[in-house]
Figure 1 (cartoon, rainbow, N blue to C red):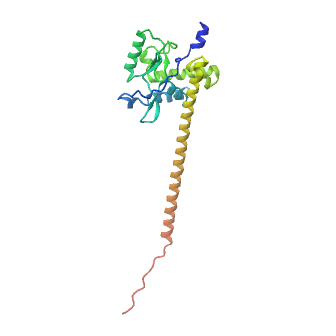
Figure 2: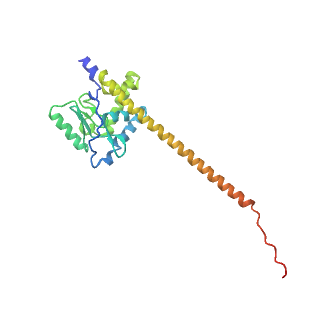
Figure 3: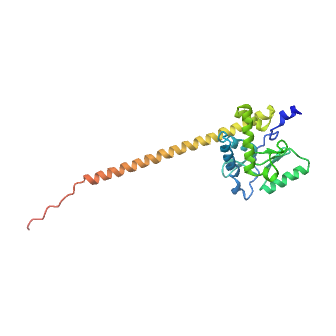
Length: 234
């Protein structure tokens, strides 16, 4: 039993979920697109995690490609079981899906932004409503990742063990997450560089405007008025 626990405890599913491309977003998706990202940012800050690492994990876990935004979006109502992901329209639909799976005898089920496995983490949430709450789901994932880092003192190993203790499962998963993490950090760097360039251009434009204003002022001050000679007697 201890051997099995070492192999499987803290695992969040045995296969790496593929990013859904063809599945369309529901009609109400606009209001939910940033829910996972927002809660993930709070959880990273609260637990002092490396910036965007939890977001990278969410992309590997519940990420979907959004054609309009041209980026991967972590979807809060994701349910993964029986080798496939289900991207539901809302929390109620996700809860209903999990209940149907459990009724069929399926217990290895991942849910939410961070795809917490209900079988390997039976005490993580008091009910399905809590498990599929984006804030609770991401908070638990952040605390789990932090505890895994405390074990190994390595964020790379923490990411690997977040998925599985078994190397043949966790190595490709870790590589996938690290690829997402590099992409997120690159976006951050590009955004900072773009801001710096804009600040420089704005400063240069401001200096040019001041120079022009000063030049016009000097020209006005130094201009000698021309007096017309008085007309003599005719």
